[in-house]
Amino acid sequence: TGMVDKSCLQPLEKSGFLNKTKITEGGKKLRKNWTSSWVCLEENKLEFYKERKQQTLASLKMSHKPESVELHGAQIEWAKDKSSRKNVLQLTTISGNEFLLHCENDNIHEWYEAIKHMIDKLAKQ
Ligand code: I3P
Image 1 (cartoon, helix red, strand yellow):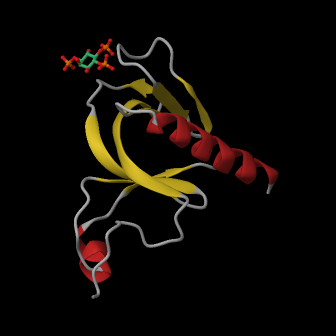
Image 2 (cartoon, rainbow, N blue to C red; image 1 turned 90 degrees about the vertical axis):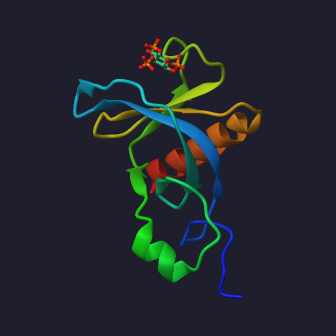
């Protein structure tokens, strides 16, 4: 049909909706701004798309540049005192940027495992 039902162009390890907020950038603490993102875990990065739409690859490429987070050298851990929410993950990049990731359901455990697996795999390369 020419339509795709996911917003990712590379082989995918995992994708789905997560709530996300960046809390530190370039050493500076940011004000939290939780937003829902369509998240794609790829070979070496996480990509955050503003929304998920049924659309062609061509229109996706033109109109939806994702925020891309490098996973090489990153760390993923359960965030304990960073949020009033439960089951929040903290992703820290090699450059020191910090993100919180959250979802309402048990899927967050699969995300933890998948991201951790990818980070560990990249560390061995
Ligand atoms: C923030 C907002 C966030 C909350 C954050 C608040 O207020 O309520 O949802 O984070 O808590 O400061 P505002 O909208 O005025 O910016 P959580 O949902 O993760 O708890 P925090 O300041 O304790 O981080």
